[in-house]
Structures are given as C-alpha cells and as structure tokens.
Image (tube, rainbow, N blue to C red):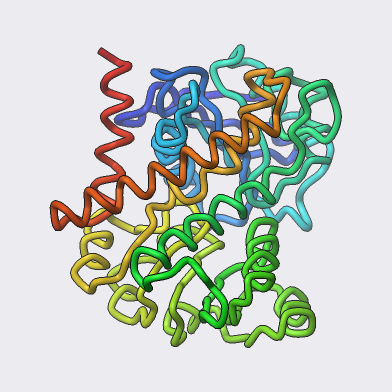
Length: 349
C-alpha cells in the first residue's frame, strides 16, 4: 500500500491512498482537529478523475468541521473517498485496505458510513482498524446513521416551513425530493407520514417506482427536480446542486435537504437569499447522522438521550440562524458559516 501526503491549503493532513492489489485508490482528508479527532464518513462513488475525488474529499472534510461545530460535538472534520462503483468494484479486500490506511492515522481520523457504504462495510473495515463507527453490533454500536440524519432534516423542513410558510404543518405541502438513497428514502417516509405531497427523482428507477407505488409520489427526471413546482426542494443526493444554473430555476420557497455541500459556491447562498428562497444550511440541517455516530466514537452509554438532546439543540441553532439572518437581512448560509467558524476559532485560540 502507498500512502502519500498531499498538500492542501486550509487542511491539517491529506493523504492519497493506493493499493493496486486491492483495487483501491482514494483520499483521506483531515480538515481540522481543533475540537477533537476528525470524524466523517467514507464515500465510494464513480469520479471522473483523481482531481475530482480529491476536491470532493477536501470540500466534504471542511463541511464536517462546520457540521460538528454546529452540532456542538467535540469532534473535528475529516472525510475519506474511494474511487469506484460500489455496486461493481467494492470488495472485502478493498475495504480492508482502506481500514489499514485509517489505522495508520492513529485515531486522528474516525470513519463511518457515507454514500456507497453501509453497516456491513463498516464491519469489514473494523477488522483492520479501531477507528470506525456506524457498526451494527458492539457495546456502543450506533448502527446506520441514515434514519437520524433524516429526522434532523425533517425537523429542519418543519422549522423552515414555520418560518417561511407560517406553519410547521406539512400536510398538503409539495416537497420535491432529489435522491431516494439511505437518507432520502427515510426522509420520504417521514414526509409522507406528515401528509406531504411528494415529487421525487433518483438515478435508480426502482426507487422512484417504489415511492410512486407506496407514497403516491410523482416521478420526474433528475434534471428537472429542482425546477418542480413545489413548496420545498429537498436535495438528498450529491453536492453542488445549488449553482448559477439551478438557483434561478428553483420554484420552491424553501430549500432544505440532506445532501452535503449543496452550494457550489458561497455566492449561490446569497443568490438564494436575493430570490427570497429560505435555505437551511446543509451542515446544520443534516447533522443528525454525525450526532448518532458520535455516540459510538465518544462511548456514550445513553445513546438515545444524547441523540435527542443534540437534535433539539441543532434545531434551536437553526432557528437562531434564521432569526439572525432575518434581523440583519443576511443569507442564512453566511450566518451559519459565521456561527460554526467562530466555534472553531474560539477553540483554536
């Protein structure tokens, strides 16, 4: 295995991981350990190039620093990515190789599930490193974080609806949901139970067909989901969906979803604000998953109580961000970055 340090401005440590025998090429990025050991999931997806994979790891790890700070967790920000199709290229050998790479960092980075990964994969990785969370079994096992992520996003949607639409009641509200993967499917179920009318898209037609059959969802193409006539747009797939092309086309009055790094650039958050579209900053709205994972990393005995308390605090943080943004006529995205950034700066001093 080859582990090579990569220079990246603003990050403490970045490594390129390569193990040709295991079919592994990937990156581990540690953005900050100011608040504690870096924690963030392991993502596996098809990338167009190593440069694209590295950029994803860098953006995601920075987002994890902000997310953990916003959630009030004693954890820093990190992320790992593996290049490849998880449906075709993922093998036990590849996962074990990544586990060995994580182990070399001696606890400066803790990994967990993300796109393309599940609890079973974490169990394979755990055979090679102690620094893995999201396991299905064990004394402090936290399991799949997806349902808790979905709950946090659902809370953010209700709070956003109360702020912008006058009521948290989602009955009859139209929600355009992009992505029905681990988190998106759980969120869809919560929204459906709350009486929302779903408009959905996903790269897997079986998922959208299931949503149509079981929840009466309207199915649209992925290229059209952000343009759907809806009250709320919930991005739950890949990042950078909010960009110079899509923002002018959004017809919803609220954007609140589970995807990481939804804004392609900070300017896109300002563009949403100028259009009077209320944006729930993603690293605040989707913090439920890392809260769940943190119980395993921090060895929290009463996991349920910890998660409930932190979810409530996260909702309160989002409410405070909205109030500050409204008072100062600023974009919520800018306020959220300021709030999380101040926590990092205060602890670095």
